[in-house]
Image (cartoon, rainbow, N blue to C red):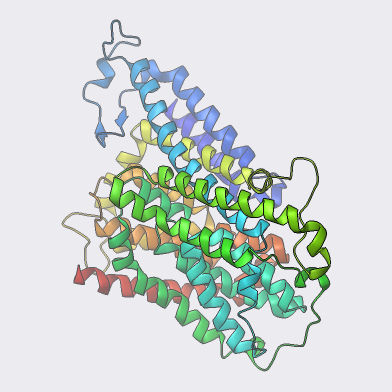
Length: 476
């Protein structure tokens, strides 16, 4: 039965990676894989010899001798399966609720056209200067609103500044690298880093201390090299601004700063209260929503007197009177369902002890590269290969697998290196990260164009950043 579960996982994984070839949204194989894996576990639970206790991070003693069903609360195989399934569902729900809150805040900012404030900062026409502006914006914004959302926002702004798509896709490629680098050093900057943070593997302070400089170099070096390439020489052509682009809302800048501040508040809330991050995110969402509703009422009252003054006009379609309801309707739910499926599918492999055994094999079979992370521990080569692997397949299951494979304590350097490698390694292929996939969709970027023009820049940044991390960890 274990072989069948592994086969289902591998087939589902291939379907996810070949999403664009199969023309099937990746959430479908992810959900199917999750359900079938757990169904096979339920059918074969009586014959399994080992079970992994996720809470204790160790195998359950004497699992093979337990009865199928226990009486009066006695330990049993069915009892362990139900308890483990509920445990993983709870941990996965923490991540998903957190992401839902963050996505809603971002959509509320966009509802008030708050991101147009960022566009107003860009005054230059120099291609090189615009490149550096967008690189730093991607690096900083991705750390605050996550790399996926930062990429969507910046490419949307880019489309209003640069009309020539052949020029624009070069900028999009560097935005992907910068956004993934920026997401790696922030607990809310990337789904994988958020998973490690919520899973109590990394803390905000240590994450910043370990990864800020490696992530910065991962962005700076490719951007510096790219600034000497032909597409970034000279000035951009003058673009006429449409009437739609000129529309603003008087509360746009306020909602931008309020929303970003609310998201930044979440790690502070966790440190002060020791509550899970999703609780702080819900509080932040509530505060932002209150101001959104107040400002939305102001928008209605001004609709008749300010329509010809260039104010952003409220969509008065049924159901869209509330900015919160409108923002919730625009959330990317397929991504949420995909994360649910893939995390719970990996949890199935973890529960059988397969990942635990694989981790032990890695520690003994893989040659050490450079400085060992700890005596008998995981080599740098393993983690760097994980980073390269995240470019080929989705980094979410790779990090989810590492959570079940390794048992190192909070803020061990292994977890920080995994956060960096998984977060930035995905830039090496356009399908290797959520930021790359969304950029590919928005700009119709060809896979092989990115492989030829951008991948080598991402690889250089990844190697430089990894080397910087190896130096940084000796200081802590």
